[in-house]
Image (cartoon, rainbow, N blue to C red; front, side, top):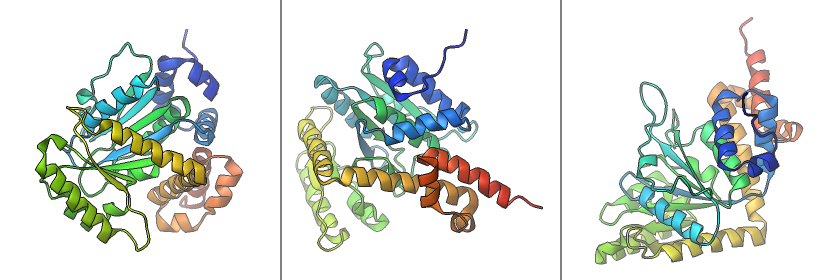
Length: 315
């Protein structure tokens, strides 16, 4: 007898890791099911856990840092979900699992769930499926870590799901200059200079980043905190966790967290419509009305997709 998929967030939370695994699998198999879309919308509207996005180039140490953050959160008794976004196979389109193999978690630990997902055709690293997975994890886990694919300058997508975006930079790499060119310095809420055990080189990188942020940020805008961390020696990890906590606490106190998530949801709909139907399709629909009428971003996307396919169908 087939095991029933959770129909509500309460059932998803009660079902533990097996229920979460089944539900995440349904993202690809039940994408057009109205009941499943309703579940995704319920998850999007739930307060849920806090999402930390890690972005930065390959080799900067995001996976090692993810391991350290998992240990820190689990030591506090918090449940942790991880979305490790991997490059896509050119043959199957699936994840190559490079990031997941670098994450060392205890399979018997019911408080940790790791899922690798393919970047697919997204240069910025997050497919529609990955966004849905983040939303589901966020609804039932205390913390969600999203580790981006790490392809250099196209690192913006993770900002549209994260409550706190941490940009990771490696000492001696010239990353800060490259990111300034790409405009990425406008995005992070926190900057982590990895491999702090390199000493003077890491401190120099932190100073360079501070200067780059001053030049890249709009006048009057606050500057993110810059920390040096070493995931292998645990140096700076407690401070990084505290900085993430402080950032989300500030967002919550000001009401900005709710507003940020509303903007993110709207972006998901705009982005989905634009990618599928171009700017003409985007201009042919009322995103805000669709969101209000659908009750959530995932149902709104499905309804707009059906509507625009009908309108643009060749006669």
